[in-house]
Image (cartoon, rainbow, N blue to C red; front, side, top):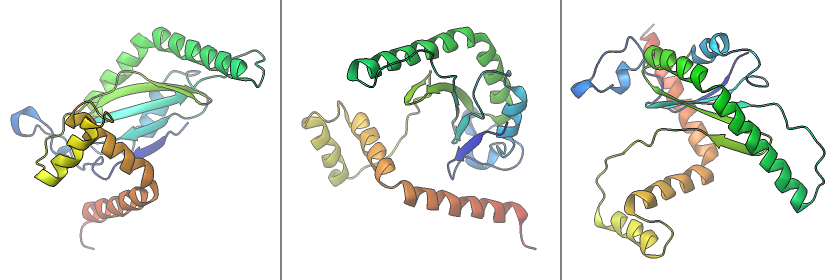
Length: 201
């Protein structure tokens, strides 16, 4: 079982990890995650997921989302039937979350020690997906007045509750509308990482 791993351009630091300033971790100090999918394949208990889990990695967090067995029973293709199917799926995901809690904590603790990133989990049944506790990482940035006015417009119009919420909304919007461009950018940066690791030949 090999997981499908999505890695941001900043997610694959090379070399041995060492503490950064004030106990933090710097981009270049993060352990390599190229073996993460294989490590999880050997570490996850059999029968948890159908097939390999989807793995997403950035500098701070590893998110593992697995597909669970479909719910049993016949549900008519009506609004009520679809709602009942979704409710049954949500119930199964909730049961999986409770029954695997201790084991997931154990796997996460080992992965966090090995890869120096927090680990979060999620489960999916068809179109129903739930992410369990995930990291909310503060991002410090300096914005000039035009950018601040954009955020304030989103807040004043009720689209967002605060400037930070507006910034998160804007990032999600860019992500949805620039998937192909972002994928090309990550691929290019991954090649740069590989060239940097190999050095001049």
